[in-house]
Length: 276
Ligand code: ARG
Image 1 (cartoon, rainbow, N blue to C red):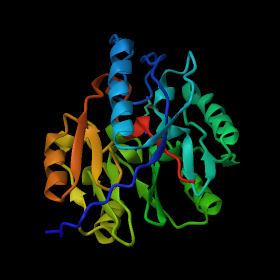
Image 2 (image 1 turned 90 degrees about the vertical axis):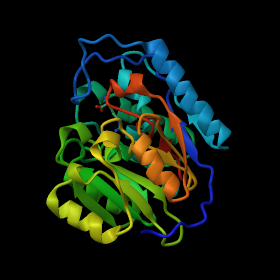
Image 3 (image 1 turned 45 degrees about the vertical axis):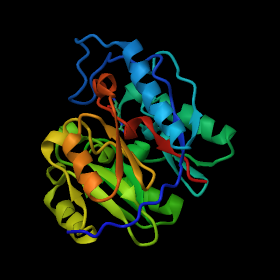
């Protein structure tokens, strides 16, 4: 049983995009059902609860303007990855989202980030998560393995590749969560079945104390959460994972983003961390 450490909240700076134009008009992941109606007003209300939660936690929340015709732009995590003031732009797998890449890069440029244009396909923090000094990178559905080497060059950091195998968990941030990453005390949670065998073995050896999350919590996108080191904002429906977090001394805060789950995204998908 892992030891409970004192939890220190470090308020984050994040980028979000209001889902004013959110809908499901195409299908690029198994959650999306264009034939089912989407309640955009409800999506906006749910998103606003997440936004207000972050403000209450003392976060600096930056906003990018939503653009009509780009219904997935609300999933800001896919807009790039920002570490040490360097913004590695995104290059989307599907044409439906291609226009988002340059829009996010333009926002980064206007806000003083050192933007690096992407060469290989990569979907930003959807597939690239910083844990301590190391970037963990997913592939299998969206980001090209070549983008992992590219990110290593851009950030000058170790990048560890993980293979995703379950189409429901098509981005790394749907199956893997960073809970705290201070001073060699990296703590993560993940759903093992979303990964191929070599990746499971690698995760087990790098993170022997990781919280292993069950399918019930994974399918409500519980792992698609965002932590400040103490508070973990997560899907309200992920009650089992919330209990696991509380046992470890984290403070889980549930929010209901069920309307945004119809696009195949949750808390983390709506959140891009800006690290200056
Ligand atoms: N509909 C979007 C897509 O399939 C959802 C993106 C979710 N974002 C995430 N970071 N997992 O691309």
